[in-house]
Length: 351
Image 1 (spheres, rainbow, N blue to C red):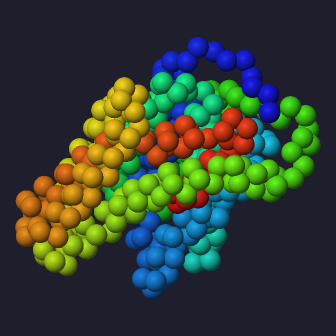
Image 2 (image 1 turned 90 degrees about the vertical axis):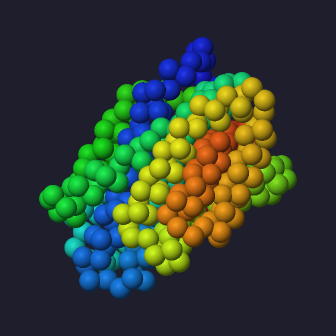
Image 3 (image 1 turned 180 degrees about the vertical axis):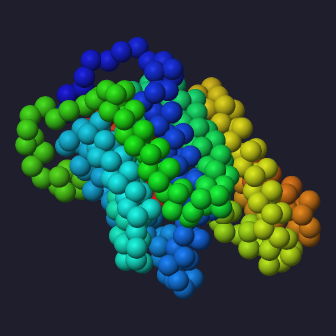
């Protein structure tokens, strides 16, 4: 691989190529959070099939993580992001036009494929352009704008679903994804290109070599990523079920709890970035784990709305301290040669 000429780095230089597209992408995904299950239900599906529709995207991401990491080292960061964004745009449009269960599954799965390619290419691009001393704050800001987009999206999606139809949020989301594609085309500058065509003739062999050299980092640091992703996924499942089934709270009360916790969560990214760059990655990661886990334990002792709110605020504070930590750690550990392959494996562990 040949490095292209470098320009002085400023976080402002990431606004149009990275931060704005990330916010749009998470906002578009947030629009679909309240409407996707109801949209799938409108096809007269059972609860298990609705769950399968929702999971199909994650399955596509999981299957594509490693191939995406291999591919982007051969076709470049920018082209990978363009293909990924185009696939996500078309699959979202397809979801809005779907007429059967099988189409829903297919388009969701294809959307996962595009999301994996886009996400890993974006992570690799940031690894290329952001200097190590700036990574904590730059990637924490990235995590912050993602949280902001996800926080704002559901209200818009819910309004469109009630005011117009359950298909309307998908069409708006497709438009947003198209804008994201346009921004990527205009503002992403390729950071690496293959030096000669056909230089990498055995991609699987190259991937195996990266795994062999860096397997210890993937198994040790990767274990921490598994733990934090498990906590994050657990929060989305446990809090609604515990609030409704154990405490008897209604949907609105659970929604308020989540909104307040999310607001605390997304406000912490400047602190997380400062700690990572000033003191080191572990000084943000370890408190994140400890505070998040403490909040999860507190849930089992809650007895009403207020006590559950306190527990989730603690969890939001802890998770906010970990804003961007896993991406930053992955970028730090990634080798200069085989960055894409390593980050593909890194994302696979987290996913």
